[in-house]
Image (cartoon, rainbow over all chains, first blue to last red; front, side, top):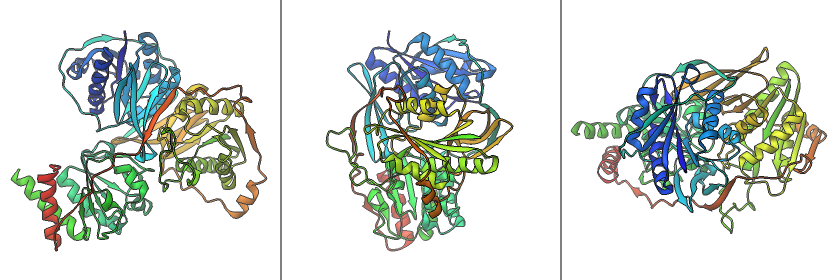
Length: 324
Length: 256
């Protein structure tokens, strides 16, 4: 029987949000294929959390427990999943296009002698095969792709697939696939300050460009971001100027983001930046240059000096939030 | 230290991308082709490593004849030799199929370390490196912003969501370069002159005993969904602009 597998992603024993997004998408695909969803959970002390996946349409969980799986490593995870897939022969394997999923996907595809559609934003089933839609050239083009061999593997972009609680129970089965040597090991984890929101997972992003003038200029954006529980992003010019770290860069040579709300401040809108944020749901441009290309991509355009407008906007939003 | 850098040639990031007739490929007429920006970090790291510890840097590419230009750029930066697997139709191939070709070339070079850019900015897949690592039975260190090579080991700094990982792996190893790893050098004029005389070996898939075997198939390419024209927020003063914007976001867009 055809099967759709989900590779769950956990950190410190808790599922990451992407796991629920992927499980929900898998349920839809499985329904169209007349198949059931199996989740593969790797970790340590995950047994209790596994049954919870039933809520998102998972019928069966293969739980791989052990110290070697407590933290993600390419070697342990790819070997274990490949061994299980060789036995279980799923038609489709879905995982998150997170940093973990991006590291794992290609390796898994090579191991299973198939291919993978990376960072997909839409899934469909046509003639019993998966059709995946994925942005290319950072979103300048969208490609519909198919994989000719099974398992058909696809990784799904964060924040795109809705979490659907369809209800149900998942049967949890322990699995102990054999793994070989773990060559690449994690020797240290340096956690960032609590509360920092990752750009690729953020619901709201406040982003700054050359118009921020210097590193201190970003203070007004930090204040606005604080009120909106937003992540702060930056254009390539702001990063290249050394005002923000590279991890904050949005665009074709940075991160591609998909928030509900993207507020671009002092960003002119170079094509490589637009490519990285154009699939945000609502886009606001605040730029004193009325001819800046960013205005043509925005839903709401403010032609004005960001250093005057943004602090006022922060005050206005504070009022709205207070009024509830 | 025997170092390999894999290079992909891609459209410049400023390029407009249009879908070609037939709907399965892009219009390439007006494209300016460049070395994938992330691969430049790979080349730079290879050159730094060679300068510090000695050795040889080989750059490898697969694709049409034009890829020669990007390989020459790497040679002009300071790489020692290049290998091109020339195939006129290879652009747009399944990255896993490309990885098979690259792995076959790299195997013969017997490297200690293999660099890739963390992804190519055309197909945005970022999977060829890990597939090559798999085919060669090597560990992989992905999206790395700092790298130390000592005592037969690689120690890499890898930012992920909310934290930074420090990873260690024995050589030989596959490393993918993220922006921040280094500042790639420009090719100097003497470098460009010298590059013309450096060895660039051209092979075919047949030479490697391979046939192209794509498992990922492009069904259709489409332009991105068009956005409706935006609304200009009214207001004379910053106060009015801010108040009207907040109102629009709250009431119209329901985004705050």
